[in-house]
Length: 70
Image (cartoon, rainbow, N blue to C red; front, top):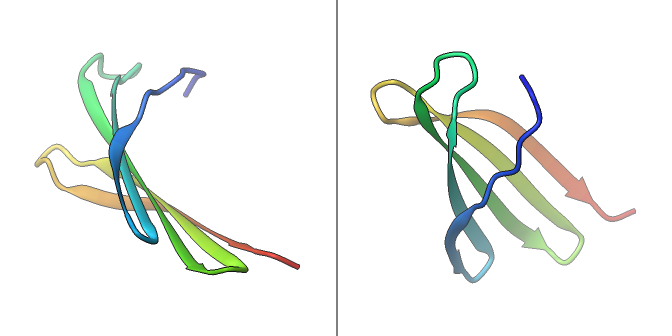
């Protein structure tokens, strides 16, 4: 879509960090939200999940990345 910087704010509860950012959608020119959740699985693995907000306000997952130390 384009390049932009987002400022996320959120909470960290032990092994789970949940953050939300708001942005202006370049296609619809409307205000939208995105959410990122980082979960530490163990000392050698963590998972990042990305979510976008649907028109009804609910978040749906659109990305999952699992990082594993070699």
